[in-house]
Image (cartoon, rainbow over all chains, first blue to last red; front, side, top):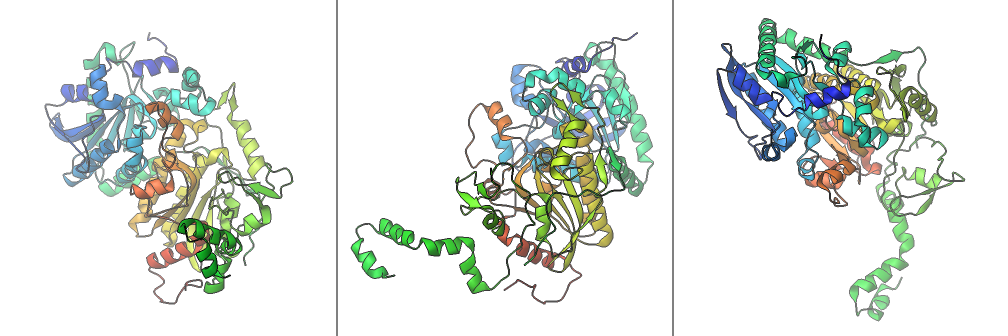
Length: 283
Length: 330
């Protein structure tokens, strides 16, 4: 019998410092890997690691958020919050993957995109939007795993994929629980309430039909047995790539379109809305 | 006015003299600011007239509107004649219905006006109740959600349009919002016409959780398809444009136009100030700031918006190969 966790417990587990991160996945799953650096425009953002590697005989492009395990590493990696440079590095490597027909594996683990003056000045919104647009039409299979925190647009910027999987205790939200509480109630200390209300757990997203499958974690969380958890992800990944590689590109793109096209909760009435204001008067 | 004698009497400091001169020419200046002099020369019709405005709750007698920038009170009819732009240049926010005045008379036809929001998360908290919030906003705005979509023509050129309503939960992007843009983009794709989005939004709608977030890819997928047939998406960013709207379709539009002074950004000012623990410069995240940093194509004042859009559309729509000048082009 597994321990039952609340949404807020899962937030804590997803942020556990010993939880396997992107480079742990690379270390355990890849028998060869080269990290590629830089966006060729401005900088190399250590909050996103990316490169080409080989998993079970298959060459793949791996792009993931990377958090640190101590203060120094966290400073270097900006707590896993990418700047536009990080997203533009990912963008460059999306195109690279397309060019060389490599499937793309995205590992999502970020509190969100970096909110700083520097990032704003260099177009944080544009960097994320561009990635979403390019992933939408990338002519190669894309698979993503939410391995920790899926924080808003910062996660989505490497998260528009043909298959989305989440680890059992990972979360995916429109804004981090603290930010949600601050936006909704102007009180970030209500983060636990926000976590519950906003339905951010893997189970919630699976129920809503957004996530394709959930990867089980050992009782208590992935940090208690990283090796085993990562292997399970690897197995699902291989099955997934196997299945996607048989789909013709045109079909793949059409299915990707449809996958996101159907997400939304709305009603259709027979009556139209009537916005306030009078009919227009022209000179 | 006898400029030369006036000038010689005050020639000690040229700048002050000039200012006196301007002061005495205030009536003339007013004419210039209101564009009446310009029209005398150009004889161009007014750019567009917004529709009848709903009563403003903030002014007691609904007759005078106070500018939040300069504090000047303007008679409501005069303000409307001036497209709700204050004399100081401050662009006040227009409602979605008011924006429909941008198009050729009686050409705007709304589509998908029957799509209504749901409460997928059953969002109830001690301080906030989504279902109730929706009802209140619907009563206040007359809209089911924060967006209207439809078709229109602009100086004779057909296009698909979406317009946000900021008064509806901050113009936030939820399921209905995403669905309406996706449908407008799909209609534009099928009809081979451009898409125009007029935007004012605080970002993704929190109350629909990650479903709101997933509207970002949904919209961008539809836009990518539109782009594949060579039809442009033109985004007009009005005050304010933040978060999800910027991180999806608005900042990757083929042409990005902002209104003067519009605040545009990914993260909100408050969030950034809390993160870096210092005050941000006043112009940070303004349209002018974004232009300077290469993030938008141009800043266009409201009274030039209609002509600008019409000229742009003419450049991009291949169907119209005639060289006939558009109506107001001089």
